[in-house]
Image (tube, rainbow, N blue to C red; front, side, top):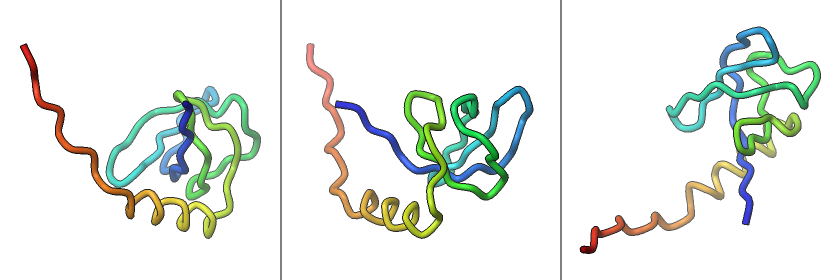
Length: 79
């Protein structure tokens, strides 16, 4: 199963790279597959690549749905 998530572009780095933010987690990603991305845009992120731009209202609704999901229990080590 694959999961793509909406993230907000907070910095353009040149060479088709950007820094995005998801709930305080920042990551550098590739914009090679998407045109005309600006700071403040939301993009769909999958394995380090922006796949498409996303309407800000839709991005917010999706992020709110993710926030409602129950948290996974911590994995316990086994020997």
